[in-house]
Amino acid sequence: KGAGEPRVITLMPGDGIGPEISMAVIKILEAAKTPLIFEPVDVTPVLNSQGMTSVPEQVIESMNRTKVGLKGPLMTPVGTGFRSLNLTLRQLFNLYANIRPCRSLPGVETVYGDVDIVTIRENTEGEYSGIEHTLVNGVVQSIKLITRNASLRVAEYTFQYALAMKRKKVTAVAESQVMRMSDGLFLRCVREMAAKYKSKMDQAGIKYEESTMTTVCLNIVQDPKRYDMLVLPNLYGDIISDTCAGLIGGLGLTPSGNVGTNGAIFESVHGTAPDIAGKDLANPTALLLSSVMMLHYIGLHEHAERIEKAVLKTIRDDNIRTMDLGGKAKCSEYTDALIKNLK
Ligand code: NAD
Image: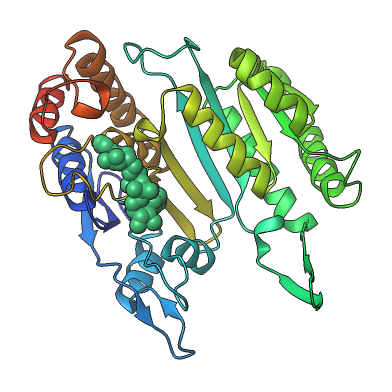
């Protein structure tokens, strides 16, 4: 592919507010002249040949070709036989690392002031492997699976991200004193990768430390500034990344990325917001910031920075906010104001 040729991105608008916020994001990306072409696909659940819910073939075909997806929230159907489509996508494309930058937006007041923490969570195993069985009536067992392979690759991604994004410190988190084998293996793998990247990290002035989950839980709510980047096994990562979202004022502003061996999908952390869907009231910022992560991922750093600055200017300086941030702007009004701030 020649330089300057637009990159094709698979767009999964999603359900509820998904289509509205996706349209807003695309409008902003187009106004910022990002060299992208969006290929929309519908992620309505279908039954596969084994009678399990899966995503339509078109989604798989598109993602296999483009390798990068931007995704709105999906409604999780309630009832037996339904697997979460988010989980299905994660497994289909082997999205092994979940990245969540949580940065407080100046002007969105929280008790914690400036928070800027990136969590990187192992996304495929641990307690969430889904391996559970009944031993005898009334006794169940759930397997916590940790592999060297998965731990090393999430660790490697963490150090590469730290270097690319010029972070300050990486904290590896596990309970290796208690779960000596499983968490022990995870921690040893991160340590091994830290050694491999040591000279580059030293050169960039990025520190490496290790801690326990309990210590991080205590410290992060007392003084989140102690942390810069955290790398964690699946379950701990799930808990701490939601905690971090809480520190910056909720899930509404939080973007995320799922990166894997077969591509990456970027998505907002919030759900489909059925209560406000179709009313032009949704806040597109989380999906927009997810698209900013996507732009960094594909190397369009300048476009990413320009859009992020416009977000800050619109919310902080111009005080144009959607209802969830205490403002009166409709989704479309906020979008247009933000486009004016793209310089
Ligand atoms: P939700 O995040 O959709 O809504 C919670 C509250 O936050 C609602 O009051 C909603 O109006 C508000 N909200 C959420 N996003 C907003 C935005 N961008 N702007 C303004 N307000 C916003 O959570 P829920 O109600 O628990 O879930 C609804 C559906 O979404 C469920 O079917 C759930 O399974 C699904 N869901 C999907 C994802 C995903 O696809 N990644 C994540 C979470 C929930």
